[in-house]
Length: 263
Image (cartoon, rainbow, N blue to C red; front, side, top):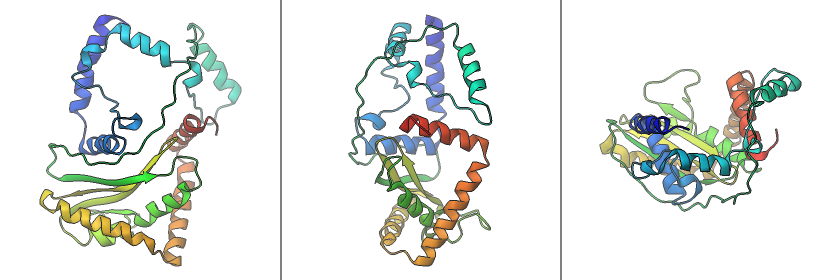
């Protein structure tokens, strides 16, 4: 690493932060509030205050402490294992492997909280979430079904596949002309997760949207057999469609290896 390379990267980090859209900013604030001052609550982007500390020496020291072959994932689709390993070995033939250093595995501690930020968007973007099961746990399946039942909707979208009959669409989006979009989400990590709803509305009506979302969430205590059967069929269909998507398949392979060490 050369000094001029690191200095050039400083400018790119600032450009990346300035280019963040509203969705990314809300996601970062959500994790910062949910896991205050620990693990997932730390921003992946460096702050202006910490930029002077990023020098070739500090970056090289971090690489020696954390970069090792044991912490890398190589994914291949429709390729023989022998062929994949052959090209992997050729790619790293000129590199001396950094020995694996033991490090403390800090577990995510859910704290909860509330964070807000002024942005350039003319709309108010809101995420309302709570802690959900970690990846690989049996409870992830019913939570994913809840996400399917809640669904989502967009004020400008209609027709097949637009979530027209989902709860969020019928109880939140279609009930107010001020709500632009609303959708349920579930993000799983190795030791925790976040389940919630993301909505976009006119700023003066954001409070009403949040109240409608909360009411919709509390109504999940009652789910009919037909609604559950429909959600299961939709979820199965979605999973089968993802198997035909190479990019989705590679992402799934990599995620499973990273979070569990196996596939």
